[in-house]
Every structure is written in structure tokens, then in C-alpha cells.
Length: 257
Image 1 (spheres, helix red, strand yellow):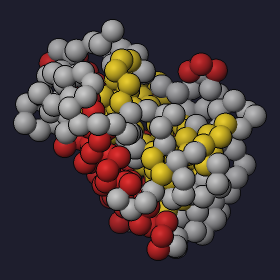
Image 2 (cartoon, helix red, strand yellow; image 1 turned 120 degrees about the vertical axis):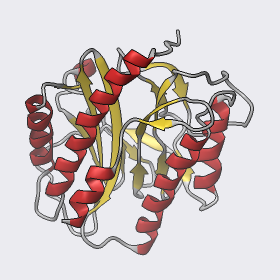
Image 3 (cartoon, rainbow, N blue to C red; image 1 turned 30 degrees about the vertical axis):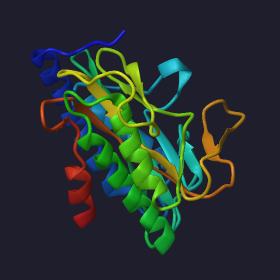
Image 4 (cartoon, one colour; image 1 turned 30 degrees about the horizontal axis):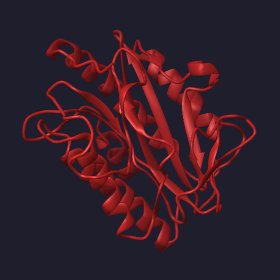
């Protein structure tokens, strides 16, 4: 069942998304060579709780952390731990916040130090793919228009678009209908209406689109062990132009410091 949000509910999601976006900025300040991924997770949980909210991911279906941290060939759902970041790594930080009864969800893939030109291009194109999808999240379009825009932009660079993992509706529940694939055909799927809130999240691989799940039951990696990138925003379908509730503004500010 699809839940369309009232303006009052969208305002509550916006407040959740503000805390989430600020949390991403705090995490970005710490991302550098020599820092463990567990350090990032602890800081995120502390920041979110200090702002009167709850990390959406912690204990969700048994997931034990506040962040999904996915390094290099890990696509999504990587678990924080003792891994220490190295020059040339890329690290996807996926975070959710629950505040005043509503969730928000956002992800960003960071470069650590100096990454190769081909990996830098992967990050650029994946981020662009997110915004190409968001451009199509307007009243009167169909879900497939979002999916098609993401797929065609990523595949133009010969990248693999992950198909087994998708974006989703979001609101009182972290994952709601509809699913938002990152591949599809224009003009297909449900018609988009005002008040539909979506987490749009391209997951794009430098190599093939194929993935494997590790024995921990969570970590998803590329089958060919090549790097993968992941960017995500929480978005409201509107007339003419989608409203993006999360922002990368605080990440950008952190990178300038």
C-alpha cells in the first residue's frame, strides 16, 4: 500500500531530514586516512541522539549499527568495524534518522585522499544519476521514468547498475511502497502523485552489475570485486519539480574545512 503524505507529515520528515543531513556533515569531518569505520558509526549515533532523534538502522531487522558503511567493492549494508581507512579508498555512508514519528534516509560516497581518475569518475556519474532520477520525480510522470533516467545516465559510462537492490517509499516506516528500481522503461509503473515521499538511491558499479552477499547476511559486494558507489536523497514528488528534503550541503562544507 502506498501512503501519500500530508503537508504536516512532510514537514515532520523535513525535520528528520535536517538532523540526518547535519549528521552526514559531522561524519564527513572525520573521514580521512587512519580513521576506523567504527569511529564514524559511534559519532553518528551520538550526534543523532544528541538531537533528540534515533538512528533508523540500529536494530532494524537485527542490524547492530547506526550506519551502513561500505568501502570500495562493498555496495551496501557494510558493517562498521576495525577497518581503518586508507588513501585511495572510497566509502559509502548510508544513514537514517527517526524523529517525531518519521524516517529519513540518505547516502553519500566519499573519496579518501587521492583516488584514481576512473574511480573519481564513477562517483561523479553515480551522483549525477541520482539527480537525473530526482528530475523525473514530478506529478504526472511514472516510476519507470525515474528508473530509466538513472539507468541510462550510468550505463552511458559503461557502468553496471545494481538491480537486486532498490530505492523505496519512506515515512512512518523506513521502507514503504513503492520500490524504486534504478533501471526500467519510461512510461511504465505507477503514476507519480503529489505527496509521495521516496528514497531514491542509485547503486552503480565500476564493473558489471552483478553482486554477492557475504556470510554475515548483510554485506553486499560486487562479484568482480571492483568499486561501487551509492548516493541517496529523500525526495517529495511535486508539481513541476521534486522537493529534496535531505541535502549534501553539510558534507560539502565539511570537505572545505
